[in-house]
Image (cartoon, rainbow, N blue to C red; front, side, top):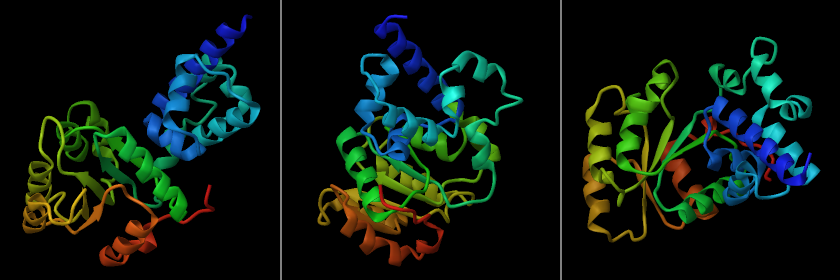
Length: 234
């Protein structure tokens, strides 16, 4: 098999297992301590992966190397090989929903989590409409109805499709989601939208770009430090 074919087969396997686990490229990159663009290139079959990278991706997906290199057989043997998503069904640390349309800010925030040793699962959506669908289990996220809602939401305000303030208003006015802590992501503490977000019930705000000090300052306010999964920094 040619090297180009090997890259494509491997990339397809990674993508299939990632989608099977219902995680984004950002989350897979975070779990494997890789850049999202690097994972995207691997899935597209345009980048060679070292053995160390392959092992990281397999570990992040919760599959063995043997299964990873036999994607077709591995996917057919779902009854024999537990799907990575099954692990999320057991009680554990809370999930974090990040609503951010700027890929650079997503990368910096995920890096801040790594620097803080926070290993909770992070779901990323890119606009306000998808954020509402995710939180209320609608459309492509209807399958989430049987799963716990996120334990905290990181919300950018200036979003496409539905403004962040409208997302916040709907979250805080619904009895099923009102108790979810919402942290506003903003470029300025003097932003008028931050004042309006506070009025609507935002629990705290963090200045962008998010860094370790910003996370350290806000977690005591929300009193959810005990629910964050503190692992070894990567």
